[in-house]
Each structure stands twice: as C-alpha cells, then as structure tokens.
Length: 581
Image 1 (cartoon, rainbow, N blue to C red):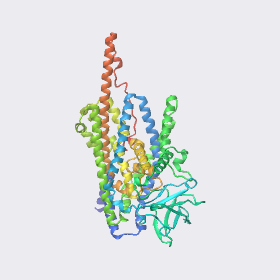
Image 2: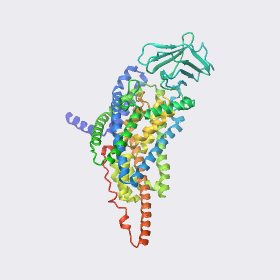
Image 3: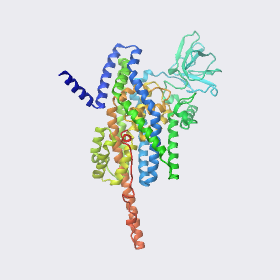
Image 4: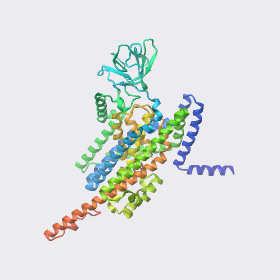
C-alpha cells in the first residue's frame, strides 16, 4: 500500500508545473530565510546556502554572449529582409513597433526615477556621500584625483583631519600611500598620482589623520566607480558629463571585435560593444546577400543552429529554477536583519507598484492616444473587442500560444483585414515587447541601488539602448531573468549580478503574465492602426485609378488592386523565439 501511495504522490508532484514549484520554493525560501534572520548566522553559512543560486546565475550569464550575438544577427537580418520584401506594409510595421519600444523604454526610466523618493527610502542609510572625481583615472593621463566628503564636519580639511591617503590595488598585497595632499576646496582632498603605480583598479581607499587614526573610507573602494551620491552630485561639472559620454561612445564603438567577447588583458568584455558589432555584421550580411542573389545561406543556417543549441542549454538550466530561487532567497533574506528585510520588501513593493502603473500608462494613455489619432477608436472599446486574446495571454504567458486567438479577435471583432492581421501580429509576437522595455530599466536601476551603485547619466543611456534591443527580440530565452542578466552585464560588467535578483525570479510567473498581456494588447493596437492606414492608401489609389480610367476610357482598378497574393508573406519564426515573451 505504501509504495502505491508514494508512486501516486511522485506522479502528482511531477505533474505540477514549473510555476507551482517556483512559488513553493519562494515561500519556503522566505520562511527559512526569516528564521535565519533571527539567528544571524555566520557569513560562511549563508554563502554555502546560496551557492546553488550563485552557480545558476553564473550559468545563465555564461549563455548571454552567444545568445545575444546569434539572436541579434538573425533578428536584424530578418527585419531588414522583411522591410525590403513587403514594401510599405513591412516598413510601417517595423517602424511602429520600433516607436512603441523606444517610448516604452523612456517610460520605464522616467517612472522609476520619478518615484525614486518612494522606493529608495529603504536604502538611504546605506549611502555615504563620499566619492572620487574623476571616477575613473588613467595613470598616464590623469594627474590629479580628488576625494569629496560632503558630510565632513569641517568645511576645509586640514593636516589634522586628513594627512594620509592609503590605496590598495586589486590583486596587490602592498599599500600605496600618498602624503602630499591639497585642501583648496571645501570638503575636498586632492592629490597627484604618484609614479610607478601598479596597474589595475583601486580596491580600497582610506584616509587617515595625523595620528594615524582612520578618518573615513571611500565606499566600494575603487576609482572606477562613484558610490554614495545621486546622479546630479556625481555629475558635478561639464567635464564629468564629457567623460561619461566619451566612455559611452568608446564602449559602443570597440577597437577589437574579439575583445568584446572575451575581454583584453587590461579591459573586460564589453557586451554593448559586442551588440554594436553584431548589428553591423547582420546589416552587412543582409546587404551582401541582396547584392549577390546566389550567395549561400550556410552562414545564417549555422548561426541559427548555434542559437538552437544555446537555447536548449538555457532551457535546461532554467529547469532548476525552483531550487535556485530557494537558494538565492534564503541567502538574500538570511543575511539581512528584520529591519533591513522590511525595508527591502517595502521598496520592492513600491517598485512593482510603479512598474504596474507604468504598464497601465503605456497601455491606456500612450497606446490609446496612438489608436485615437490613427483610427478615431476608443482604447477601452478596442480592448473589450480583443479581450479573449488578452485573457489567454495572461493565462498562458506566451504570445505564441495566444497568436491564433489574437488573429481571430482582430479579424472578427476589430475588423482588421486577414493579410494585415496575420503579418503584423505574427511579426509583433516576435518583435514587439513594450512591457519588457518598461520593466527592464526599472529593475536594473533598483538592483543597482540595492548594491549601493550610483547610476550615472551614461549608465542610463546604456540601459535604454540595451533594454530596447533586448525587448525587440534580441534575447529569446524564456523568462525575465536572462534578459535582466543581459542588461545588467552590459551596464555594470564589473559587478556580479546582485543577490536581490532572487526576488525578481520569485515573482517571474506573475510579472511575465502581466507583461505578455500588455505586449499582446500593443500588437493589436498596431495592427488596427496599420489596417486603417492600409485602407486609406487603397482607397486613395482606387480613386486615383478610377479618375485615370475615366480620362483614358479604360479602368485600371483590377490591375492595381492590392491583393493578398501581392502580400504573400511567409513568416518563419521558431516557436521558441516567440515564447520569449
């Protein structure tokens, strides 16, 4: 009897979906983590409890570079090919989807920054307004570095309050001491960089007084970062803004293509540079193929096969998501006090409320305005007409599974023509992910603040660029976590993925459903607008041809009518590519 019960129990447990297991793991991890918070375990204990989750994140990070490179090449090549194959219909579709994605990214950035006063309250005590200027010093080009302490009790530093700056370089055991300090600005210590400095980044900067007592420490201890200040404080001069823009441009245009993948001896891999290279490579490959119609598709086929392999590996890694969620949540909660945990949960709740509010603004205000301008229709009436598709999108969290219902709703309820609905909605399922574009900037900025990392103006530009690319089909991996890791790796390559990503993974099942519903709704709005524009164009052309027919005595309507045959479009999109939403 007992073996039969155990067998039935095992069959029942195996039948549960990944969503149920993830929710159970998140609840168990939260409970166990709260118990650890009361015990205040040793750091070594939480380290090993979170080891599986850390390895899970490392494995996903390993997939990012080949996944993004192959996806961008195939995606861009397909978009360029569509634009050249179907004329105005393809250009309008790609153009509208690009417009909505760009606006969605800016909405996400604007909303998270506008409500920072609400969600950032839990981290205010972690910020110490001490930073270096410039934030990145090149030894043979930068002659002077300043340390600014905005909360120091003295208006000017003196030899008694600051007599020695001690710096430790990463990988070096010896300290570099600087005693020739300058106090010519309020709350600022400046010094010239000594000769023969070790190469690498500074891992610790400490300031001592004349008695050898520790005065203060620069947060995060590196000249390559600016920690503990707001964006306006960090960018305090035109020179700082210029340096930020220069660093951004050098990241966008790399000088070594292979270095963007694996890094160079004195530089780390640049995901943003790799994305630029992949974009240019894809466009050049498409142009070359157009010029030479006999050119083989072997390269594209090889890249597609490599992408299939990477996706299979990623999907295999994602199967241990419940265990990784449990491990990461236990580590994240267990090493926090109850007060810190309460502050984190409060901040996370406000953040998700902000994201949902941004979703509603995009779906109702922005898309509603577009729909009214082009079709004179009410957005609420439109959503009611496509409600079967929206309901299925929320239930399935898959645009691919929803696509047949979406096409049927647009054709029968909205009145979109067959060829427009099939083409626009099929392309939108793979290309249009506005809600992802809203979510990613918000969560990346929140994760940065949980780690005490200041998000500079240049960082925000990089977030917008990478989030827009990632949300337009650049990362077809399932779930939200791989896309978040992608954007984080591009913006903050020197920092590991924060442990707070465990909270995102725990709520992935709910967020993914909201995101898919917004995306499908956006697809239907674009399809309705393009169908209206297409009807106006056809009516205008018909009137023109009828007028010409009257003048010439012959009708040319039948010769110039836009038919389905002329728009015979074959969209070959892998189901896995569509499931990325």
